[in-house]
Length: 351
Ligand code: KG4
Ligand code: ZN
Image (cartoon, rainbow, N blue to C red; front, side, top):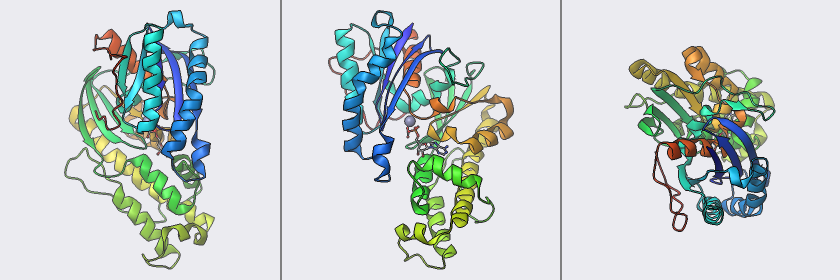
């Protein structure tokens, strides 16, 4: 069964065809990230306009090598995400489902991030895919720009959310720290690059203590980075954060980035360790944009050995292959189809 996935929840316009929930046939991504960089974050109106320009060429490119007659169904991100962005993907998928007469499936973007790990084969160049699909019970650590969750899957589509962030998502914390340090958007990759050159023990930062052993919190850490940075340049809390980047030296920035990254990743590992001890999962998947962080990958492998399944970096950040893959499981497990005449976006959809 070949599924066309369509993803437009944030700033990536993506389409992909995946066969039987594991073979990647095409994976096309047009990102508007460069257009947002000047503003230091995603501008929803710019993202929506960019989706509108890219969606048809991106879908054409993804289907080109497969052919419409071989596509069995369409899966589209219904939410969560930016309304204007989601609308472009959902309206395109609805129209295609009607005109090409294909069944339509509505997909939860956050849930789908986990399904990138189910892609194990491709003849496309440049992918480093896991050798085997994840086994159940499966522990998923979902770490993206909008979400930080620990989810225990008993089976496909049957899961319990064990814990989540009480405030900011971990990706959001990377993005905010990048802003404080004057590092380019998106913050995750630039903070981790600076961290490679810094001393992770240079700045002492607090880790949050949570009541639920599987919960996370990052907003205190972000504030602690701001206060530490102000102290390093000899100022107090009244110094506006936008003046900091100009006062910090490169080596100070590197040390702050490394110390922040170390603390943020420790904040992820502790609840994951608690869940592994309690539920003894067969496999562990780390999913979402922050899963592209090399140091997080190293730490997870160090802590949990070969139980950890690493997704290719290109499939960690937003893509449509994960949407198509979850679409396959929904279709093959007889989940209800979406009505192409009435499917609506759900910007606040949650697992
Ligand atoms: O999953 P994703 O592409 O979009 C959402 O669904 O949010 O995740 C984007 C997030 C951003 O916050 C970005 O800064 C972060 O993932 N990110 C990283 C890295 N690459 C992307 N964070 C840390 N290290 C990275 N290498
Ligand atoms: Zn995402």
